[in-house]
Image (cartoon, rainbow, N blue to C red; front, side, top):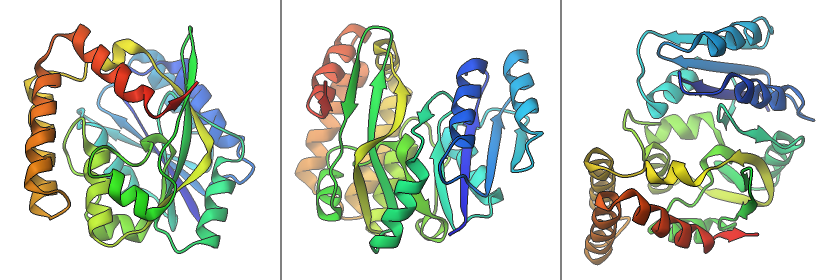
Length: 269
C-alpha cells in the first residue's frame, strides 16, 4: 500500500512550524514512500531555506510555483506529482501523531472505504480542545449536508477515487468541503477514526478572517453546486445561504462569536 504525503506552504507560514510539521512525517511509525511539497508562490527567505533543506531528503520533491494559486490548486498540483496509491494531506503548521499513517492504512485494510480521517486536537497558548467528527459513512454523508464531515488536515484518501471525483478545484476557502461533497456524490465511502490524528495550531483570530464578500461568494457557489447535485434540498439551500450571508458579512467580532458557539458543539475540552 504505497503512500504519498502532500504539503503546501506559502509566504505567511512560519519556518519553525513548517519544520516541525515535516519532522512529524519523518517520525511516523509507518513512513510514506514519498512527500511532495508545493511552494505556493514566492516564500519568505526563512521558509525558503527550510524547504530547500528538507528537499535534500531523497523521499522529498518540491514543486516551486511562480505565483500563489491557493490551497486547493496547490494541493492538486502536488497530487498530480505524487506516486502513491494513497494520499495523506498535511498542513504546513500542524503536527501528525506518531501512528497517524499506520492507523489510517489499517482502516483501509479493514473496510471498503475511499477516505479516512479522524479527530484533531486544536491547541493554542491558552487552551486546547478535541474536534470530533462523525465516524460511519451514513453519518458522514448526512452531516455533510450542514458542515464539512471531515477534519481536512487529518484525511487520507485513495488517489484514484480523488481523481474520479475531479479533485480539488481552484477555489479559495471552501476547497475541502467542495471536494468532500463531490467525492461523496460520486459514490466514495468515508469513515473517521475515533482518535486524534493531528495536533492543530488554532487561534481565535483565524476565525475573524473568514468573512467578506469574496468568501461569501465561494460559499454561495458551493451551496448552489450541492443543490444542483441533489445533495441538499431547496429549504436547506435557502437556510444555509441566509446563515452564511449573515455571518460572512458581519463584523469580525460577531463572526468569532458565531464560530466559537458552533465549534463548541463538536469540541471536547
